Image 1: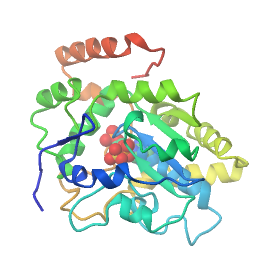
Image 2: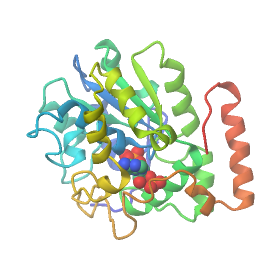
Image 3: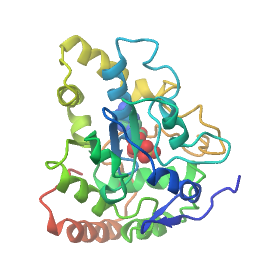
Image 4: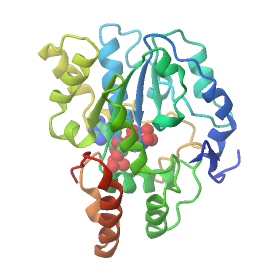
Length: 288
Ligand code: PPS
């Protein structure tokens, strides 16, 4: 496999080179009635919410919950690397209702998700922690190009020249359409602050009775520590040619504010300026 291929542009958005090779199948993907989409900008809590939702839907059925790795239980729509089934291949072997992961922005999501009135759970995270998490992820998920220095990566992030493009457009566009569509918009920082409250929110959204013992059970299985130690949740079973955990673990810190250990005063000022610019046309706000 060509290690670290350059990003390719699809629909105006940069994306992992291998993913671009399967782009036609992604565009042609037919969502079905009852499919549930988990969408995020990368590094915003996708795996965490995927584990929560999978447990909510399947906790009574031990044959289905926690059987297989998270990337098999919740197929990643755009995923494509050599020698592994693509996201669309995995999904096309299953019948709706399916649980589907994607990082696609609103405008590139296959139309069938809207036609079939699929529910969407969107998670957003403050961009400084996304930036840091993404930087480490670029290092370990070696299907990405070399991130360069942190300073260089920060510049690329601000210019939207990282995989999935502009963070600001992503979070704002999903925020804008959340009321017109069936979208539950969550924040990583809220999940950290009160995970059980957010689990209850998700259960209600999915029409499930949020009984306290189930909420407690799901919370216990989805703490950072529990997921870091769980080989079905921590990506340790994905081939090292895709993710090399010896460079940096997928389950890295799981906190808010790690950016403070990474951004210099000057970088932080530059980033604040970028954030103010990006957020000048929205009422969406983030906690850092
Ligand atoms: S990906 O590759 O885009 O799907 O990554 P994603 O899952 O969105 O984000 C990975 C970050 O989420 C953290 N994480 C968690 N934080 C708190 N609690 C739990 N249970 C949890 N599970 C994953 C993970 O550690 C990554 O953040 P960083 O800041 O790098 O630690």
